[in-house]
Length: 86
Image (tube, rainbow, N blue to C red):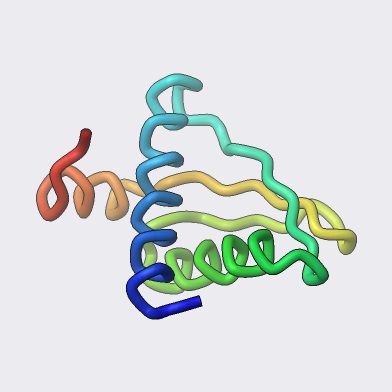
């Protein structure tokens, strides 16, 4: 995957969690990943990156690829102040 595509993937992932945050009253969103699936692997790596930046919280549910993600206040501020939300 190209760098531009990874940047876009991370931004879209954060926007998805932003929307989910308000639709679900702040609940965590359930995801799964498989290291055998290129798209799911890239998505998980995007989630890890965003978690390390403090823009989301990531919590593994089990050892077979299930996890929960939730946008943080820092992630909300980033989107609302730095990025135009569609």
